[in-house]
Length: 124
Ligand SMILES: [Fe+2]
Image 1: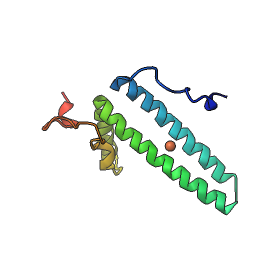
Image 2: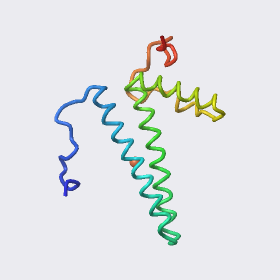
Image 3: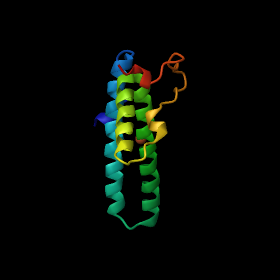
């Protein structure tokens, strides 16, 4: 089983930000799969303890998904711009955009954009 090999999934070298962004997209897909899996498990049991535990874990996966999205926006400013544009379009359609999703905060240890440079300023 691949999961028992401690070297599975380890990069053989340091990734560029573009490569890391690609890996983060895969991580996001895994989070979505986990959310759907846990939802299916919730729907398949009446055990109250199991339901509470699974619900809690599923909610954490939802947080992880958003955290990965924020990291992705740091690594891929073009994707951040698409997210900002999508949020504007969503708001125009009557949805309520989450500010935190459209305006990424600098991650710990990651330098922020130069002063005066925002996601919106990347538009041409
Ligand atoms: Fe997770």
